[in-house]
Amino acid sequence: MGADNPFVAIQDLSAGYFASRCLHVVAELGVADALDEAGMRVERLAEQTGADPDALARILRLLQTHGVFGLQDGVVTHTPASRLLRSDDPRSLRDFTRMFGLTLNWRSAELLLEAVRTGTAAAPRAFEGGFWARLEQHPEEARIFDSAMTAKAMGQVGAITAAYDFSGFRHVVDVGGGQGHLIRAILRACPEVRGTLFDLPHVVEAARGGGDEGGRLAFQGGDFFKDRLPEADAYILMEIIHDWADAPAAEILAGVRASAPAGAKLLIIETEVPEGPGPDWSKTLDIVMLTLFAARQRTAEEYRVLLEGQGFEIRRAIDTGAGISVFEAQSGGAPVTRSAGGLQSTVG
Ligand SMILES: C[S@@+](CC[C@H](N)C(=O)[O-])C[C@H]1O[C@@H](n2cnc3c(N)ncnc32)[C@H](O)[C@@H]1O
Image 1 (cartoon, rainbow, N blue to C red):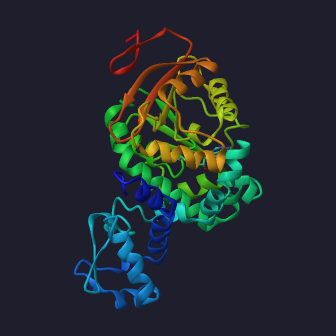
Image 2: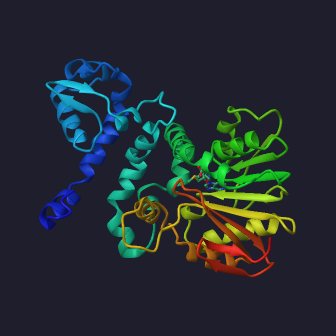
Image 3: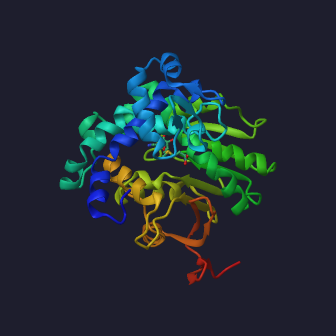
């Protein structure tokens, strides 16, 4: 984008969503799956994906400027970024891209102006019951969403299990754990630990298919606003609190506190918003949260305040190096001090 030229910067930014839309379209058509490593003429690729050859070539020409696909003399080739759109790539972001292209997200984004004027979420204006109800009623969209969550977390779970030692726990509950990618990784890294995946009933039903880790993983469908959580010595909330404004987020934390035995740990795993003005994915995600839920990405300080409001103290904040942090909190207990590396416990 034209960082040095204000006219170009505004021009590119105003129409930048067309580039996003092109990405959604090729992900939906399965263009990266149809393209082999040798490269392919655009006419053949169009035929295989059910697209108009001229339109597809022009979409690929724009995406090429972002490093997604190569296109020369009518021959399309893969780039490292386009390979991430393949369904069979272990780090596939195809469903992640499709998720952002779903009517659910697209229609909500259209209503951002209303969300900003009123401070209320756009998704419930577009869809009765809002985001989660829409997914419950549309199984294919729910499948894409769940798969997108698994994909985005795949780049993070290794870093989380490397950065935080879960082996001292007996029972870990992953609250809103989606398809169970994190809790399964924890159980594989720590053979002595048992886990429970807690999420909405339709999500848990889909997650059962991924196996129960030799009987060590239990499944519980429920609503974290209404239902008691199982007793455990650690509760994980990974990218849950960012889906909610402060009042419902506080309710979720209160629910954990009510279920947790004394001494249990609460692990908030979130992408924190840095204090500086530079570009950061968290700042885009923050607008997604605003649009869909009137929710927010938070700074470390905002997490501290939110948690303290529910009687939790952050003992440690660990930057996993994968764009996501682990905030280890406990109810009550010793005071917290700030050090160069972030928040640190004054106890061991
Ligand atoms: C953004 S996803 C995060 C999934 C997973 N923790 C991760 O980080 O990849 C939010 C999760 O919260 C679950 N969820 C939403 N509302 C819920 C509720 N009321 N009770 C339980 N789970 C809920 C969704 O089904 C979804 O799996």
